[in-house]
Length: 462
Image (tube, rainbow, N blue to C red; front, side):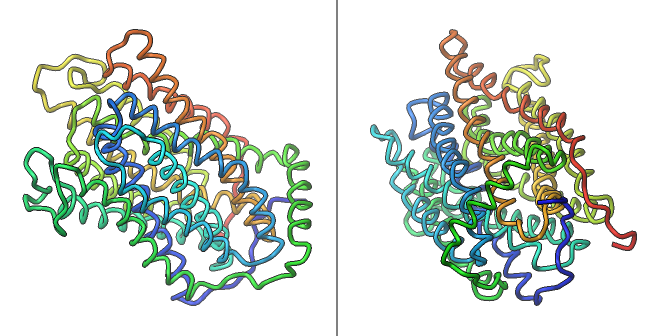
C-alpha cells in the first residue's frame, strides 16, 4: 500500500442497487435499537439478572465477548474477501449467526437461574450482526463516486435510524407491556396474546429483530452489485499475504494508523454509551421500559436527522469536521448523563420528585442520537479516504478490529468499574452511575488522536 488516496472508480450503481445497499442499515438498526439499547438490554438488567448492577456487569461480559471474537477474526477474513472478490456470501453466513442469536433471546425469562445460554446468545448475536456490517460497508465505495460517498453514507445511516424508530414504536406500542398494568405504551393489551407478567413483549424483541432483518436485507442480496468472483484457489494465502504487508506498513502510514486508533476509542465509547444508556436509566433513574422506549424514540428521531445533516456537512466540509464536532457533543452528553441522578442534575441537588433529571436525560439522549448518527456515517467515508480501492474490505476488517479491540475493553471496563465501586461499599445506584465513567475517557482519547488523520480533498463542486 503506497498512498492512502481513497480513490474509487468513477461509476454508479443502479438506483435499486443503491437503495438495496441502504436498506441494509434499515434492516440491521433494530438490532441496535431493540436488543442492544432500548428494550432487551434494560429488560435483561432489570428482570433477568439478579439486580441492575449485576445485569450491567453481565451485559458487558456478553457484548464484550462478541466484540472480542470480531476483533480476532475480522482483518483476516476481510483480507481474504478482498482477494476472493465477493462480499455477499460472507454477509449471508454471518447474518445467519446473528439471526439465530437474536431468536434465542426469547428464552430469557425473568429471574432465570442459569444465565449462560442467554449470555452466549447475546454474544453470538453481536458477532453475527456486526460482522455482516463489515462486509456490507465494504461494498459502499463501488456504488457512487467518492464525491458522493458522504451523502450516501449519511442517508443510509439516517434511513437505518428511521427503521429503528419504526421497530421501536411497533414493540412499545403493541408488544411490550408494563407487568403492573398489562398495557403497552398506547394503553392497549399486547398483540398475539403476549403475556405481560412474564415479559413476553420484551423478550419478543429478539425474534422480531431477526425477522425484520431477514426480510429487509433481501433487496441488498437481490439488487446491489457485488465484486466479481476472483480465483478462489489461493485466496486465503493471498489474503493473508496482503494483510501481513498492510500490518507491517501500517505504523508508517500516519493518517491511516491514526484514524484506526482514534476511531477505536470514540466508536467504542459510543457503543458502550448505547449499550448501557437504557440500563443506566433503569437502574439510576428508575425508568420503566415505556419511559426508556420514549427515550429511544427521541434518540432515533434525532439520530436520523443527525445522520442526514451530517452527510450533507460531510459532502461540503469533509468527514473529519463531522467526526470532530460529534465527539465534542458526545463528551458533553456523557457528562450530562454521569451527573444526573434522581437527586442531582449536573451534580447540583434538586428537590424530591423533581422532573429535571428526566428532562436532562431526555436532552442528553437527543444529543447522543444526533451526534451518534453523524459520527458513524462520517467515519465510513473517512476510512475510505485512507486506503486504495483494492483494500477496502481489508480496511473495514481492520476498522472492525480497531473498534472491537476496545469494544470488549469498553464494556468490560464498565463492568469492572461497576464491580469495583460496588465492592467499595458504594450504593448500587452510585456504583452504576460511576461505573460508566470509562466511556468519557474513551471519547477524550479518540478526540486527542484525530489531528493525525487526513481526509481527501474533494472537488469544489462536490
